[in-house]
Image 1: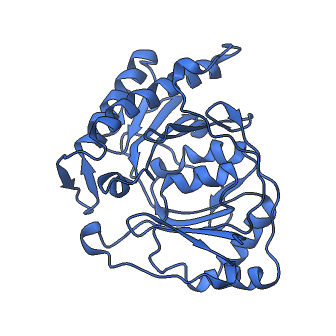
Image 2: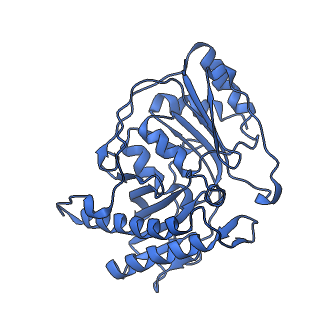
Length: 320
């Protein structure tokens, strides 16, 4: 009787729960992972049939593009960038490698840096006039502004990667005048790739996705309202993979704090193209202008499978 699925991560693990009102929140000592963690709550309101597709992996060469317009060229290159990152990441996954603590005490590995370099090289070769903003190396462009900016996070979920759990992902966003027009979530070990394109339906390994409307009522609604008093409890989600699950219909709601622009920009086309809604906790559109001197501020993010659930979530998050 699996009526809800609640996901949270303490160095990433999955907890099934029979009913939403049975949800027990818990925390894990932060230890050396830092004092300002990215915190997550993921909720599933019911287990019903959704339209989704899981296939045996996708490479960019498998995607048949018609080059009807410029966006198809961006998609082709984006897939190639994800392929290149995946080739690097799989070489290091569950193997020994050096782990370095950054200034904020978050971990980084040789895989993060090597994957980002492989991604950058493809973009610069394909679009030399485009700018790039990567998590590991920041702004890459001779000019101070650019019409198109690629925002990269080679391994979103480095802690999961380090501990051998395939709940991390590669994030790729292409911004046009500050707006995400292409977003990719790639899980290179499971070979799952979500592609979101502005104005198009989201796909998983080439198959279109859509989400049905859902709602909370009765005990579930009461339990959901309790979330507002517990959001500050350190609950660790599945990083970008939680949003991929939402786009596929397995999860209905993701609530996070402490996200950087490279953590969420690629998610916007994916969520919206699957019929979902993603904003900050105030309901404002998520945006960020990348530039050489841009800082990467933290954002509070909420994503829902539909507008009704998103409205409910915003009401519960206004406890501050």
